Length: 267
Image 1 (cartoon, rainbow, N blue to C red):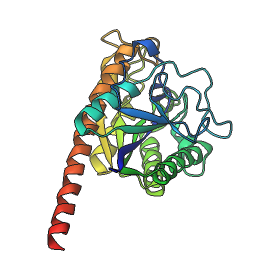
Image 2 (spheres, rainbow, N blue to C red):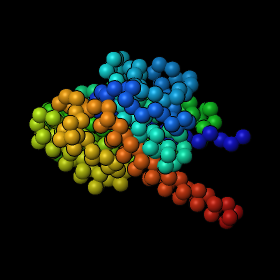
Image 3 (cartoon, rainbow, N blue to C red):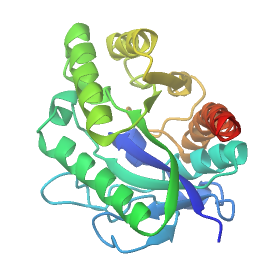
């Protein structure tokens, strides 16, 4: 029997990753494209991924925001990514609205929770004979640090520290970064955070920017309040990011397949 193949993806950050849209306006999930591993509420099986993604995955000792998740970019992301790779995604929700980067530092509660959810999913998949092609994270965070006027260099170095530690501890290959948008009422306040994110993506091979669209949505009327977006906006970003991630993962899959072919020929 052919082994079941998946990509394991952590969806992490703050409210615009958690999703403040409208679930019934999210795209219908392509059959077989994605599943949710519910590490907190039902860790003994996979569920067909649906919106609001991660709605009930609240851990009192870590990431919790009961009733806040209303519709995210995840379904659009999964559809676009799977269309490129042909391999379904198993997604894990671990996003906390209003969280500053200081709350994600190694050993902090959100960090510990995120490590636990990832490793629990990985173990379950391996115990149930899944082949995990790639382990990735999608990260969208920084608005709260903009509101707090966190200095650019502080945000940049704290984010670097967090990502280096998390990727290493979880065996995650790359962080796919979705750049934060603008505050609807103050277009300049988040610019230092956006600049820090650009610099991190330029400096770190393991950090890949996959969407900058959010900062264009205020001018397009796609914001529902100062900080969050209409479902149409989440759909656009999810589709763009999913397509770019899918192309990168497909390229890696082809390289691995080619390497294995050469090894088999040599032996």
